Length: 230
Ligand SMILES: [Zn+2]
Image (tube, rainbow, N blue to C red; front, side, top):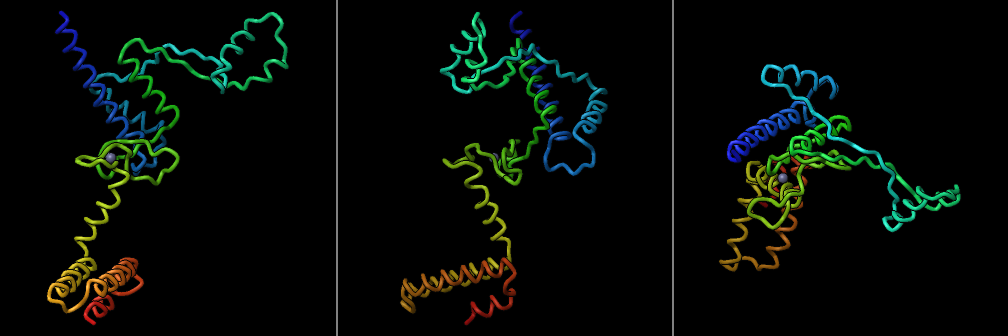
């Protein structure tokens, strides 16, 4: 009996997970090129989804409470609410905010709660350019990489992503091909004692500057090549 329940739940959760990804793809993907509002995209999503099975984000029970900004004030606040001699002056001493408390009773309710939250608060997602998984570019919509640890690395996608993309771009680029070829040629001269290591370092630093100038279009490929041949 337990086995059946578990297997059934697994399928339900897998199905819901797929739907949530589809919903993010079609409604909340920041890079989606669409003229529809998020609400209109959601209508479209529901229409497509209705051919399968209904997607209805049911909200778990929520409760609205006030919370003090400073946790040490919780007792003071509760005492004040219950006290017989409430005065405005006492409440002035406690800074409070509204907090919504959700109490999901099942995993489904828990997932639905977040879907509901994402949709109503228009939380947008982006696929990380390094690991291809969704993340929320909080505070900076231009961020292209997530903060998860990158595969086979102690660093995060955000730390290694830009370097990797740059290198991939670089190896495939006529500017870098010229630079890499000249670099190897020049480096070999150290071995034959035609130049010193120090001379090489000075050259390499300048060559990188010239390469980056060429990347930025400040000099042409031909000018860069001529400089390298000098
Ligand atoms: Zn990532």
